[in-house]
Amino acid sequence: MHYRPTDSQPLQPLMPFSGNPLDRASNFRDDDAWVAQQLAAPQSRFLWVSKLEILTHQAATPTLAWVDAEANRELDLESTPVLLGVRDGVAHFAVDVSAIEGPLERLGLQGAAFAEPRGLATTLPAGEAGIVAQARSLLDWHARHRFCGACGGETVPAMAGSSRVCQACGTHFFPRIDPSVIMVVWRDDRCLLGRRRGRPPGSFSCLAGYIEQGETIEEAVAREVQEEATVPVDAVSYEASQPWPFPSTLMIGCFAHAASEDAMADQLEIEEVRWFSRAEVRGALAGDPQTGLTIPAPVAIAHHLIRRWSELES
Ligand SMILES: [Zn+2]
Image 1 (tube, rainbow, N blue to C red):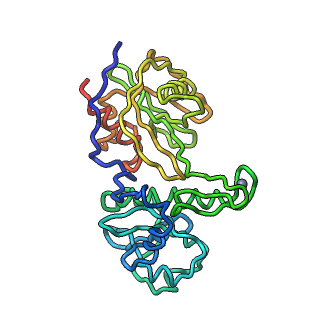
Image 2: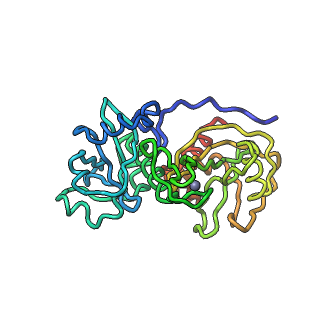
Image 3: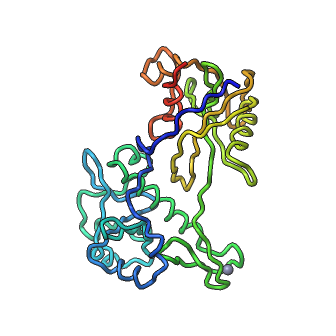
């Protein structure tokens, strides 16, 4: 078999949206007295999120703009802060302030603004984008799960916001993560990339799709490649993963070895599939316009998977 596993990958370099430095305090968050103490502690830090945009200091290099417990109390919020974790003994919370009109103006906060998370992933200091991913996914989940799927009753946050409980029937609900596979399909010295419907000519990326019920990662990779490009896959290797908080996907990055070269786009999600040589991919990554190939920006795991494949020896 023409399959060559790559070296296992260490945690460095950090994938955008990863590297969250907080200790998630799993063993403490169901202790109501401890949580109440942290919510009131003057040193605790609160990250405001409005309509899923994150409060950041506006500077050449943005940073997360945390407010203290006193500023947070002044907003007089109805929404419960959710615990993100603890660092150096200081609790960190995320707070949905979407219901408040002009929270920054009300408290006279200057030099800070709400920013779209996608743009923050590669501009925040290492690790802070991991906090953004956690906060955005968690608050979005709370906003979408206000009612019980079993009885229709109202749910309320529990365990410092790491779950919700139905007030009518007592069912507990936990935040979901949606696993998705994303892969570089390869054979010999070439890789197969796809152009999604609506993307401009020359704009290619990895094939990808959500894992379905009762499926392994390897089976999902093979099914997606067969569906989107009619290519049979005979070996799959895991490469890297990335949290993608829109709203709560875990991208599982793989290399997939193609058993044959015949490829045809499904014309549904994928308009065009094409084999590219390693030299073409290296050229595109170096910004050579003559390749006519554009690959995704470094915010996306697709960029890193394609780059890693391109750096392998032929
Ligand atoms: Zn219920």
